[in-house]
Image 1 (spheres, protein in one colour):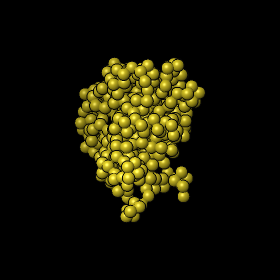
Image 2 (cartoon, rainbow, N blue to C red):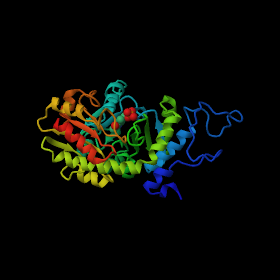
Image 3 (cartoon, protein in one colour):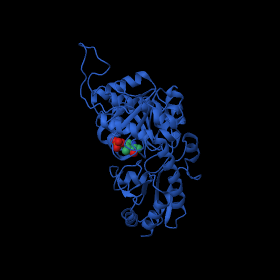
Image 4 (cartoon, protein in one colour):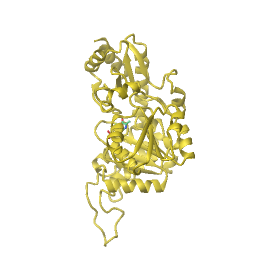
Length: 385
Ligand SMILES: *Cc1c(COP(=O)(O)O)cnc(C)c1O
C-alpha cells in the first residue's frame, strides 16, 4: 500500500518505517555516527557526513512529509532553527508580512535578529484577510502565519491567505505547531511551507527539542536543504528516534487532547470566577467557522482570564495547581499551565502585548491526556484557592 493512501492513524504508525535492511530491526536504528565510509572517492551509499544526511533523520524526514501530506520533510535542531532557515532564503530589503500574535521566540527572531540584517517585517492581524492584502508590497517575498495563535487562539483562514500569496507569487509559510498534522494540514490548503516546533505535539513527551519544515516543491526543498546543511542546525539521531516514536501515537494522543480540551474549556466557561475562555471550539469564537472548516477538531490548547483581571490572583492560580505543572512549552502528555506575560511571551514588549489583547492576567493551559475529571478537580481547587 502506498504511504500516500494511508489513513492518518495508519500513517502515524507506518510512515518512514521500513525494517532495517541489514538486521530486520523493526525500529529505525539510532545511527550515532558522524561520517560514512566511502567505497571509492566520491562513491557512497547516499550518506557522506552526518550534518548533510543521517539515516535516522532521513526516516524521520520521510515520516514528517507523509503525515503533513507533503513531498519533502526537513528536520532541525529546534523549531526556531527551522524558522531561521526559512528567513535565510530572504535578502536585505525583502519584506515579510506576519501575524501580530505569534510565538514569542518567533517575534524575537524577527525583531532582534533578522531586522538587523535588513529584512522588513509588518506585523498585522492576519485573522482579517484584508490586513494581509493591504500589507503586501512589491517587495514582499513571504507571508508567515501562525494558526491557531499562541496564546490567544486566533484563527487565520489559510486557504484565503494562500489565494492571495499564490496570485502574487509570494511564499506562504504556516507555523502548524498548535494544531499538529492531526488537526490541520496547511499544504492541502495552499501553503508552500509548513513549520513545526516538533518539541510540542509531534515529540509529544516533553523530552526533545526539535523543529521541522515540510514542503511540496522540489526547488524550494533544495533551497531549504542547502541552508539546513550550510547553517548546520540539524537534530541528532537520538532526537530523531524519539520523534519517530512520538509520531506513532500522535493520533491517539491528539484524540485525547481534543476530548480533554473540550471538557475543560466548557467547564472553565461556566465557572463564576472566569471572565473569558479562548478556545476555537466555542461557536461564538470569532474564528470558529474557519477553524471548523480547516481543522479536524479544536485541540487541547486554551487560555483564560479571571473576572477581575487581577494579576496577583492569576499568579495564585498558577502556583496552586498540583497536576498542571507550571512550565513553558506544550503538547506533551502531561498538562502544563503557563503565564504568557511573564514566561513564554515576556520577550514581547508589554505595550505590544496589551495592544494585541494579551492581558497580564491571561493564563494558558496545555491540556494533557490525564483523566479529565482529575484535571478539572485540580483547576477547581486552584481557582478556588
Ligand atoms: C515552541 C514554539 C516554537 C519554537 O520552537 P522550539 O522548538 O522551542 O524552538 C515556534 N512556534 C510555536 C507556535 C511554538 O509553540
